Length: 247
Image (tube, rainbow, N blue to C red; front, side, top):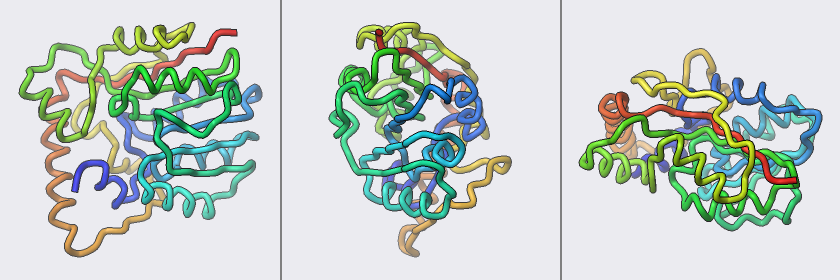
């Protein structure tokens, strides 16, 4: 069982650095009255998507590559008072079933590091209406990471890259985005990374589906995650990037 399987089994609603508090922070930077169509890539169990659909007058579509995540996201939506339509689908983030120039906002929370960034950002740009916005909460490298530790990160989390903030910005600009900037940046210290929940933002709709024979594997992954956070803390931070498609 790998890291992402563990998140799915535990029904984790917040699997990005900074937790749901970071989600609440980036939400404040969006002019929601202008937003009607929203896509989340890597929606997981749908916590952020359901929150947006319950608070704002907009339509949200969430995509994830893991069927168990989508199953739990749909169950979460049924337990949430939704203002507007919300849908969840299993799909490949590099080729989403979304019409060209049909979306006002695309957001991701700890997704791009696992993807082919060039293909992903190009796909997002295709979906966005002129002037549409991208929000991306991502891990970023502060300093050179020793090769042995970088390999450990990439193998355990299945991360394809760990860019600096400058490299993230250049990738967005290469895809055609304008007004690329960082809304916030913070260090990743043990206890701050909230992939397994935060006592201040308890998820009442977390759905755990662990079988007895899976417990040892789950505990192994949790311990490995904790160990890696301890070792990588000095080298990593997370940032909230935003950019716009051209008019």
